[in-house]
Image (cartoon, rainbow over all chains, first blue to last red; front, side, top):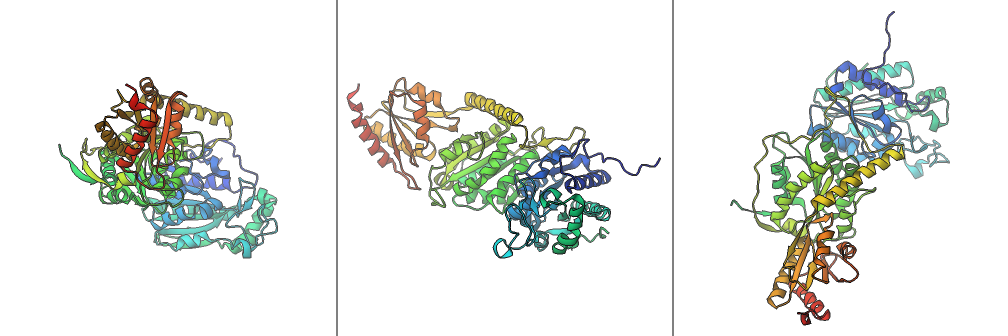
Length: 251
Length: 358
């Protein structure tokens, strides 16, 4: 019998705590597959954030250190500079990376820190119960925008990846999604390329992943997958935002 | 003897490099910039060492957290408003049992305050400073030589007890120049802490974390920290006493305040008044027992600080109801001169009738 899939070596044998239909578990597995394929499990250090993925250290079988909210890029900078042989990735949500950690993210990118940032954009604060995130869409209902996000009052959905791309130190930025098998496969290739940019000592790489949150979106998993395509990807178009790596595309 | 004339800020930088500090991150704020600049000049080009001018104090302390996780000796410095910003990171360092050295060249507050020397961060430094049930070791130097000596000691204590250590100086100590001698040469091999995160090569993967959904687990962490703090209290409490043996009045002061007080005490002695000095060197742990010992022979104490009476609470907690405790303070970055303290000493000496006691 031909083996078509097996659990990645870097993924611990532990049931996920994530909600049904959540994108986190998919992204965790993809990162672990990439770590296995690149053979870097014994030198990878992950930096998970507070939030739903605070327990990421229960799943990744690599060294992991919890960061304070939003400080992932600064913590990762400290690790990487102190021990450059490490392959360091941050795992951050939209509130973490695009609100409270905006400064840390942009400046780490601008310094060209050799880091890989995995940025989960699900347009809400998940763990805290579905409040407005900086990436919440116009008119989207959340617990803190009960009448829908009003751009006159709450501003616009922030395009942090495009902002980070303006820094010269950012070498590779691509936006993907994990709402279909094709998108999932693509995301894995993008993650791999973002790790490769660090291994090649090129600069800061960031992968923004549109990720369904059916619980806080008040949708079924299937509805949430469709919503990513039909609504979210209209505001946050998928594809390469910046690629100065000089390497071939992730397609 | 090979003394060099250096500012306090620069002396800390030199001492840190000799202590094997491999990582420094800071953000400009007066009156501690010379330390950041010294590290830019002298640490950044050393092999295996990193200097980063961070985008904020918050980033600086979190970079130190990352460097400490990776096992190197790491330091950051700032002055009062910047130290407030660092408290989040200090709480995480304490919770994760990570060593780090944090220098506060404190200035007048609250708010943006002034850039003049003050001692108004005593509460913040000695009560943990950030959220949660933790303490940090706090060293209070009173000369440039002590800034240098205590820097090496701070790294050793941080590694020994896996805790952040605060060096609480002030703008005057940081800016003043004095002759200073450095002990110890530059390390040939930079120290790397065991159990650092450097990738799970030949061992199981490790997790450094503070969050848990199990309150019992968190309670155990707090108990474990508490037990360590008890050990620190027992073994690491230090203080200086000066002319206390026959003293009828003991001035209690720390850091630059103690140095000012010493000048006043010398003049008081010259005028025949039996006055001594008690100077806590570790502000946390506070040298309670030593102060209690002094109460056996002396019942009159004057607490002097460049604030409105913060260490005073520790003095009151240490001494009995029978002790007479006076307080004199100048807050906001105003520096009291020895003559001013001498007048206060003279007043209390007479008011308490000490000149009449044999």
